[in-house]
Length: 256
Image 1 (cartoon, helix red, strand yellow):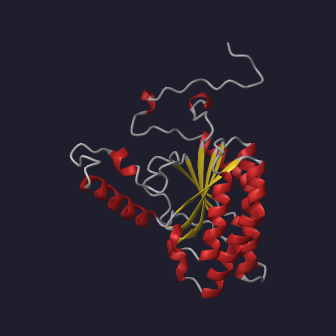
Image 2 (cartoon, helix red, strand yellow):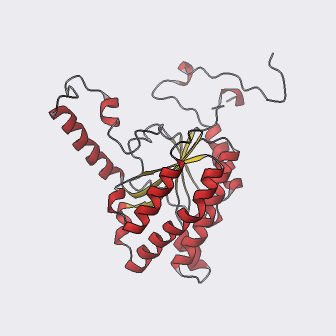
Image 3 (tube, helix red, strand yellow):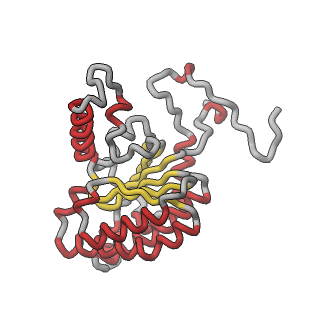
């Protein structure tokens, strides 16, 4: 297939399942919290890399609803790391005009972590060009359940006609209602599952799995994922012949 028929636009929204902190630490004889600390450093680098590469929306799977079942000491360390990350990074988010969002059952987070999160979101709420979303106490099945409850309430109070309702009427009850669907989902560490992450929103996303552990993931690895995305053909149920694909023109050359 000619390169001119490949996907030519950059992903607008990337979601990342940040996996491998524990294995990174174990390979080096460190504790698991040390691996999470190194993973937090990578998070900062990838936030910056996405801005440099023109990716306007970045969603990071930071803490799943199932992660509460991990050892208490690790959960405590993760919550403390979240507070530290937010305290350290909020100034950078403001400087770079990045709006912070959070998805998940945020009200169930420990009080101090919740306060730090709300403070950071309030401080960046007026920005609109760049968006960082942290999935915290998040699970797609839980989101679907909460959305169904919200939809049922809207029907019960007469706001929504159940018989005439479409997908958008349900989707406006998702945690992600302010965000576009992801174009590309990346998972690090070699695992090839999506672990209850954005199941409905990623219905037409492209997936990229890499063996690189999250603390070792960097801008070069991100560029590899985006380059792979460019080679995909997104058909949304249509045939390749039905998809109009404009010829890619180098920014260094005038179009014909």
